[in-house]
Length: 430
Image (cartoon, rainbow, N blue to C red; front, top):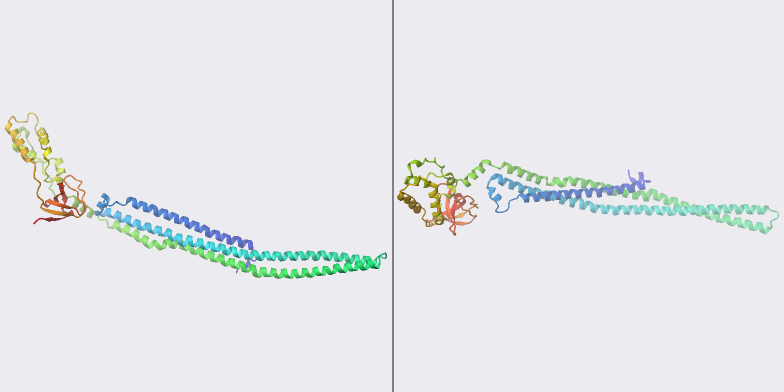
């Protein structure tokens, strides 16, 4: 079944139907374009999100990536970046393969439809022009035939009139004959125009218009097929990237399964363990027996208070006081240890205590380096007694690891502190 045969008299319907088809293509293009805009905005927001939560180089978050749960989060951010790239690819392919392609095809269809309708209009105008000629010839034939009849009746009446002369009768007959001749010519012209119109009308309804309608039908079916392909591309565009998106999602799942909570605990222990023994019990100091040298030595050495214990793993065997603070310490320490009534009147005993302090806090010479070390990792050195270092930095070794996991080092500016032994490559002098 074709339009030219079945819809030969539905030109207006075909016109509206083909226009409606073009409108649908245009509407679908707009729909896909808005869909790509949504995809692009989604991808842009994902980009901003991953950028917001990605650690900066050298930041604390980047240093914590030695822990598996921190590294897993970075891996998720990386997978999210790859996932975002696929969303951008979806938007790009939809724009190129659907929007741009269908827009170009739509313009071609509009031009083709315009051409076919122009041919139909031209054929219709030709038929209408022929019909006007037929109508004019028909009206002329009708008018001239009436005039011929009147002339014939007038001639007959004159011929029967007894008062009419022979010349009058002859004139009336000639007039009637002339009118009859003109009427015959109009009749022949009308017959000719009628034959011409019928032939053209037959050409119009059986050849010209069916051809135009069938071409419009072919155009509309091609439009439908192209549009259907666009519908398929809408799904296939996303389906084609699903394997890669699936890999991104699998990667995110894998980061979760790679997290090892026990290993993270071990890493924390290896990074921050001091290696020192726990403090022993605090001994009882009997102030009722007075202060003697032994109690003074005990106060200065053991037991150690909680504040000193907290910093033990950081200070280790550092000098607690420098030369500038020695006098101030002697004053404060003597006030803290000796309350009124407990100070002995024995001047020699008091002098002995201060003499001992002076001996203990004499400024020490800097120990000579026993080797060098090169930092393998960054170490913040944020705890008291430790010293910071950057990866690749070379430091002098002052005191080697005693089995507690810490090595004492010194910079050229005479700053000293402890670093984790496992964080550096150590070379001792031979």
